[in-house]
Amino acid sequence: MIFKLKLPIEITREDELTIAICPVFNVGSQGKSETEALENAKEALEEYLEDEDIQRQNLEKILSYTVSIILSDEEKRFLNHKDIPENSMELEIHGFPKTSSPASA
Image (cartoon, rainbow, N blue to C red; front, side):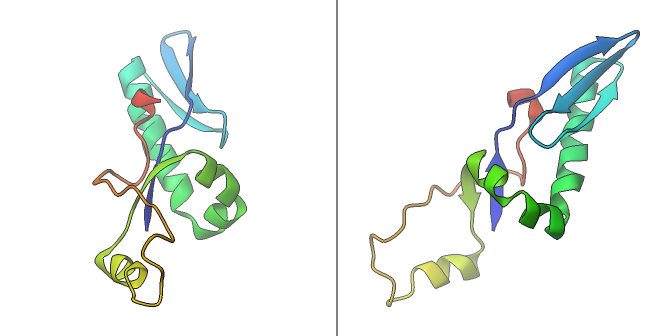
């Protein structure tokens, strides 16, 4: 299962660097331009959220910022199992990367 998150990003300038920080997870990075800082922050967030312990500790935050969920074929088959009522769950499934692009946040 892959979650697409839309996270807020705070952009600041310090001397010649641009800093991009996600206040939700207190993770960010820097770059020479806003674009570079956002790309680096996205990479830092992806690495941070790959950790299963971090995922467990932050599950409520992750779910509150989730905008869509991508299921594997096996997960889709499980949800379509005949013992599960047909209208028991509504999911929006998109082909997005694992985490949001901070630039769109």
